[in-house]
Image (cartoon, rainbow, N blue to C red; front, side):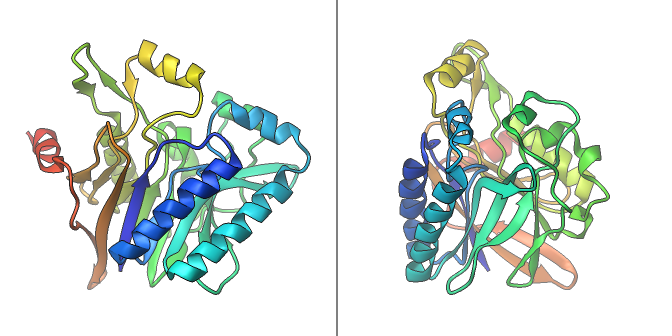
Length: 281
């Protein structure tokens, strides 16, 4: 099967999320992808504007209408999508991925655990029932979100161990110096950490930019740069990495050889080869 990951600029509203998601689903369909994977909370964006959204009691209806619109896009394009969004659940909401397939109802495909630490919990995210992977064309895709990369022990024993591939739609900034050279590639370190924990390939969909000026300025002050969406195999060997300055769609062929699932980058632009070489030296 052909999978593509999207590295977009972060939406600042649901309307913006639908518009950007539609554009990328259509581009993915033109590339021949079977499945397109977006970053977490792609439908809404993952920034300070979420506070205002969750204060509006109609937000679940807004999300539902947006999903209906994206389902129509998926039906027309013939390409499925894993879209990050807030998913009403119990007394709160999940930081979730939802699978949209042509001609089918949207399905909850994964959600972040309610971590015992971290300020993201202030947004009302709650614990999902399990962390079972979703089956797409015979491949079991698990997912790791947000600060879970710092608390992987908390994600274990809930079903992710069954995954063939771990998707990491997490927002991640790497450290850089005054020349804008990356001095610590957190994308690579965290992807390898996930691979070491679950012993499967890891594929990231990161954002290129934040939605708010506050978050953008904080990133500049802390010298943290988004982008650089990465993929590694089960051993932690870097397979592919996106630009840190451009929106991108990265393409992969995913196949099963005997009992092993293999991820192979295909037809990716950008100078990822030099980045991969730097990770291996």
